[in-house]
Length: 254
Image (cartoon, rainbow, N blue to C red; front, side, top):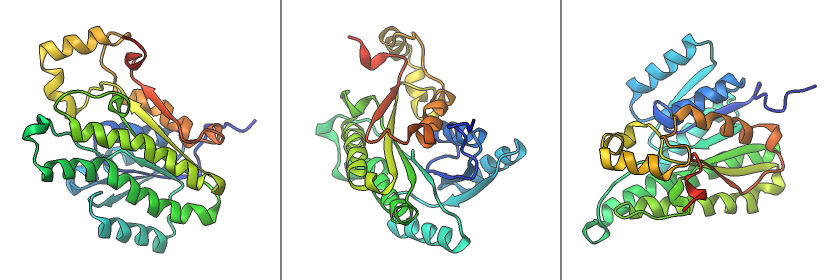
């Protein structure tokens, strides 16, 4: 019997994958058999990540581009075309956080967060879909957040962007589902990452997360890998437009 979770023969582009959640997702997809295209803007860090994965026996390529630079995105996809690299799986993971009360928030900072977390997913998703549609198959997985559903003070642009990710995912499913493309999202809970380092080291916030989460702990990046592999695999061929929360149960309780 064929393993429905086997990603052998598929190529996955994971944005923002030189570290953190993106790196963990990339390694999970690689373990399932996929060839990985790592992405980031820091070429040194990207090459270190690729070297580590090569040493682990994985098939890895790199694509250094800024996800907010549409020209660079298009150039990268042109390169993939010329090199015969078909992106079968796209993980829109690249993101950033910026904490400031809204009344103190500059429009430029608002736009920077929206561009990094939301607009990039649209632009890269569009370029991937343009190539997936003629092939009749493809998987797009956008990385949302608990803030795809709920707001917190001081992270307004991030909240708006991740709420937009939820609806962008549905829009992708609505337009591209008939072409054999499934677009879904993952909503991580509070995870142990560099981006959350300040929160993890804050005793009051750390205690709040653990008290608020039924699992009574922070999540680990590699705990997203199973959901990513599932959504990227043929096991999820009839799953489209959904967001799955990997959050230790936080969003389910009062």
